[in-house]
Image (cartoon, rainbow, N blue to C red; front, side, top):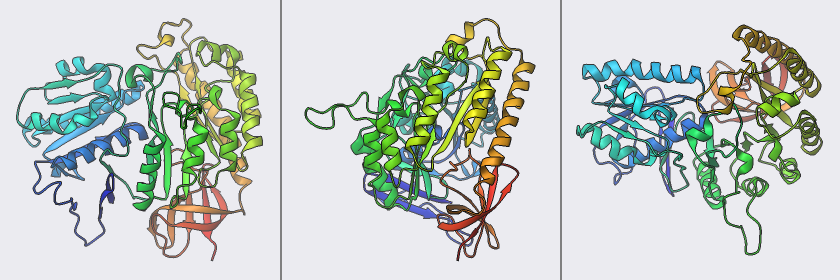
Length: 483
């Protein structure tokens, strides 16, 4: 495991391999002796993981050591998700799993952070007396003094600022977790959209962009630290720049295509992947920039959510099925080698058999490279909660299975078309012998399957040329390195 510490130009690394020293080497001025050792359990999306890495960096700068295992820690922090029911249940269970250690005295403090306390901080404080502090999304930068207070027994606290999430920048300390060759970078935070099914605006607050200079600085830091792949994330990437000042005197506000062009010039990075585009905000300028880019990949993740006009209206998506068809055509015409990923929701209130057939027909027509399907669930503080004609769970489940089956056949066919072609494979982890687990540019981390590559001396971070040889289980690929 490789940890990279970034803050401005200050950087330190720790690489652990069998038989080597596994301690973290902190800058001498940062931590002469640790206050306590902290273990983080991060749940949810990559944006949550980024928040965890920034909190880790803040704690390291404040004199805390980082533990890789819970049993080695004095303090545990559970960074939670509350996007949907299943995420909340997972977060609560993770807290309860650690709470016993706090009650028994094996831990000196337990802190719960993230979206769950942001939504339910006061209620959680009543129900979970074993937790020392609840840290909302707007208080991440205060994690060190909050832990100081918890360890000193200065009372239990609920640190929640309504309607706001802290957005880190290039000056924020951050510890990269994972193998070190691939990571995420947050370009914005919050959301101003009014989608009927989504609680994110109420949790993460108003939209806010990072400046272009800040993004370029961090991208260069990551490249200098040996990162080869950067995945750009936000709740709504297409809104980036709308709250920023003009790039030049007399010019307009910066747009996402300006960022794409600027990041494409950052040397040292091989792959830059842009995630989470809002369909009605994808401009011709953005398509042109993606089509001409070299480092920014021809990969578009654009959640369309449905293929029925009636459903799109009820969902408050601000578009129509026909406009979405035209968007698919524009993207494929303007971006050579495009990988097109989307997501859909089935079982939304009022969805009829006819609406679902419209969605299935849309998927058959579009033949998406990647597709995720979600079953609707009621969420507090959303417009859809009060809609009538709820779809029975068994009907939603059957529709989920039917749409997934349609896409599975499409994906098998699309992957089979690639067999025999030469591709670049980014190695994520060696598997022993001459086998390694990797990904193509068309495979985003953790969501798009993997490529099992065969070749000598493969190690994490290698970018190798290979020939695709086989489709595995209809989702993954196999490849052999070209000598």
